[in-house]
Image (cartoon, rainbow, N blue to C red; front, side):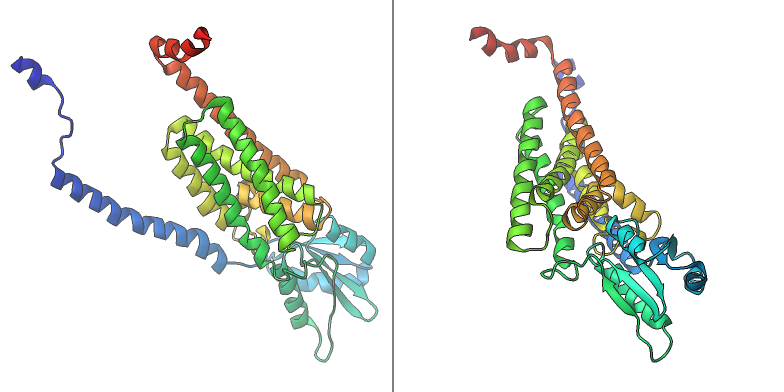
Length: 345
């Protein structure tokens, strides 16, 4: 008996004081790392906000637009120039979300077309840039082709909605995981929660706040798909790697996705490759989709829809895969017990 007792592994090799010191050291080291990561994710892109290959149109004859293009080319790759024959073509490009604005060469001088609905910050930056280049004593005519809603002229309310939608997705994925829902039950709960979130969010942002002005059902669908992309990713990670997957998903969506989304400016205003990465994550793709369906009649919505669908499908697929792997890993006795109620009925 003594030999069997001595061979039994100890339940915890560390004494309580040693465990306390270890836990304290982990907290002391982990919190500053998280703070540094958060500052890097949020403060660095904000401090380096500037146009980088920002799509901008130039309309008019080649001789009239040549001086404008030369001035734009001197700004070290700030703009990606798109040439149009006339103002009507430039307006169409803005409404199709091909460019953020356009400079039209007219007999009275340059005319600036903007779209504050696409990005109030970009529209303001273009106005300031044109005002600084205009000859002394002259003014540049500015036309807002697709204006932002009067209730949210600076886009602050739309920007503020990005984080709550991400949190809603994280919460849904976390609750499904912690409640122990698996397989088709988990998928059904995630889809149902996303649908209700989209309806509630559209009612608040469109009907109450008035910060969205497009088709109501398209906006609700965009909000639902954005939520499902996040909740599916969180629940899928948790189904594959366990509860820590919730933290990984939340970190990816809330920290990186929110800060890299470009919601307050534009993806082309963020340092490279932050703007591109942000559009691959649900918050960035969701913001772009919401702008498209709310202000531009669905123009340029295909890319964000595909990105969000990809996240949702992979996440829900991981939920189903995790449930299948769990069933296969169970012992034969456990599987019999799970089927026993059905056999009795």
